[in-house]
Amino acid sequence: MTATAIRELGRGLCVFIPLLLVSVNCLPGGILAGGGIIKNVGIAENVANVGTNYKGVWELFSLNSGVSAMHLILLPTTNNALMFDATIWKVSKLKLPGPPCRKVEDAPNEEDCFAHSVLMDYETGAVKPLRLQYDTWCSSGSLDVNGRLVSTGGYNNGSDTVRTLGICPNCGWNEYPGTLGNGRWYATQVTLSDGKFMVFGGRGFPTYEFVPPEGKRNAKNQVIPFKFLVETHDPVENNLYPFIYLNTDGNLYVFANNRSILLDPRTNQVVHEYPVLPNGARNYPASGSSCMLPIVLQPNEKRPVIPAEVLVCGGASHDAFTLADLNRPKVFPPANMECARIDINNRGPANWKIMNMPSPRILGDALVLPTGDVLLINGAKSGSAGWDDARDPNMTPVLYHVAGAGPEFTELNPTTIPRMYHSTSAVLPDGKILIAGSNTNPTYMDVALFPTETRVEKFSPHYFDPALDHFRIEILFDKSDKKVKYGKRFEVVVRGGDQNLDVTKLQVNIYYPPFTTHGISMNQRLVSLGIYDVKKGGAPDTSVIGLQAPPNGNIAPPGYYMMFVVYNGVPCRRAMWAQFKK
Image 1 (cartoon, rainbow, N blue to C red):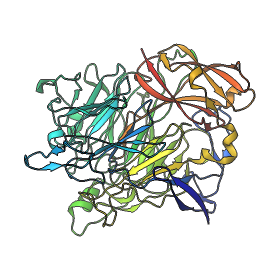
Image 2 (image 1 turned 120 degrees about the vertical axis):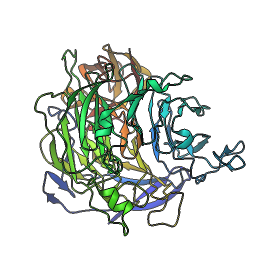
Image 3 (image 1 turned 90 degrees about the horizontal axis):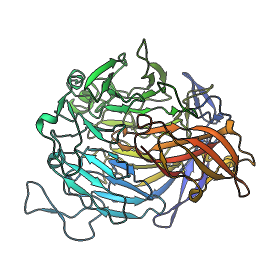
């Protein structure tokens, strides 16, 4: 047993967290546990990378985020992560700095003076409260082309609300109640190729609609019935927060419960239905996790169809919510331990490739790492989403190797803090993972089986092995192109790596930061750019990487992306924010 001193950045406090040293075990189903070597295969099987037996390190970053982060998203070009929960509880761990307080709906003489939304500086841990009036409980969101958050729905007076938050130093929420044609509680928001948004589903509304421009409102006749959400509705739902991805052909891949389709958003027609994914449900409250796997581009990309795959992991039986929430005594059935992936551009006899994870998982997140591999993190091993409806915290993150030979899964070092229902996570520009939230209680509770969690952690994955640090390249921001048009060639200047960068060891990946809540990471996307040349820079130890931007918004919707230069499977010291658009 060893111990690592970690600085609690927000308060200057040092704590000691033990790291487990576990023995090597080979598990069935392509699983590697313990001290085996992790091959940093990334997303391209022909890219040479080094291996490591390093299993990561956890650090306690902040003792109090102020709010329990039910929702989490990074705001571009700032050092801020936005965290918010719900106004319905009328309490948090942080008071507003002063009046005005929030007027409580349906109680005109009552005021709520607690913060329910904060900006956290993910470098220093400093927290800034933001005022909210309309309830954001179980809402949705995504970034627009200029990096501004556009968030939809929520509960009660927030269910038909659209709200925006800019990235200026003094920006606050702008809220527009009555904007949506239907209430959107547990709905999914998706960004289209032109930067517009659609929002799907929500409790009691098997419909979808386009999010109107700021200040406009949708009429009821602008809401589109969606039969697929009717058909996938179990007696206990299991189709809320559907997984939705913009496909590389401009259509929308929609997964709900255990079924999935391809929807043309221009004609509102279902153009394809995929095979059923067996063995349970995957959407709220049987909350599994999902991501689109990396989109790999070639230089001078001219393929008529760019390959795209989707991964779905975990979930629960169709009756899990009934057993865990409605039964007395409660019963907590084991979560699903499968991951499945499918080629969504295969309109023929496409089928799911089903794999076994090292452990079952529900309520977790599936984050695409800068290398292109997937980190499965947070959640529980049994039960369902809902208040006090899950047990057996899954403390061990799992790395899913997207490409290459060897085991499909590797277990990494575990945390010591349960991250259950309403936990969230995000990839940071330095490649670390920010982990926050967890509240299985219907208010803020310090004394409970799983207390309301406002501590924030960071996890440094396997590629932070100190032995690999010399591969960690530095992007020279002031010498690199940061605003790029679709299809155009551009250059990124870097320092470090080898004296002559080997293109066979090099990836340049752009990552769209997701809106994460309830195990769904809306609009998460990693695109590996085509590299057309690498040459020496004008200064010592520098190189110029020639790249081609994504050809259009079907591949990379317009907006800000974190650009990671990955060498030998090791991400750069800090990603550069770059804007791609028409």
